[in-house]
Length: 102
Image (cartoon, rainbow, N blue to C red):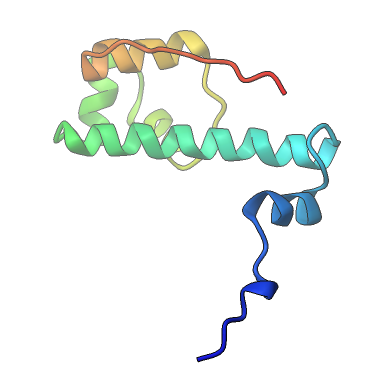
């Protein structure tokens, strides 16, 4: 079998080509949406690991099932205070943040 590695491209190169370089409006919009998507997936995975339904999680942290669903499906922005409450009251955890400067 012949090696076709010359046709491979890095994921960063793909993003640069598809959305532009970091700092461009299109790329920054993509990065923000991707981070929001990841947050929704993390909340969904944590909820499932804890054996909670969306309704049960919502009740534990004082919000609605609809709001939890919207967060998990990347259909809603989430306030930091709400995220902290979900992590603390819903999951019994503590939220840690980090910032990357490029």
